[in-house]
Image (cartoon, rainbow, N blue to C red; front, side, top):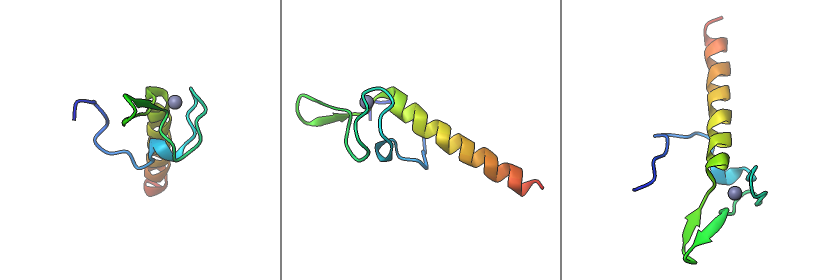
Length: 64
Ligand SMILES: [Zn+2]
């Protein structure tokens, strides 16, 4: 595992369309050497942002 990713993302980047290359959900952004699936950092960031927003909303509800 050479890539540095957040330990756990509830929202899978693959389940979103990519904001950078507009690839459809369920497909990798690109293939490296025809076999390694590439997902753009922007797409991972979008998934992470959604996850963080969901967690914040949950925390808010819990503290009421
Ligand atoms: Zn992409």
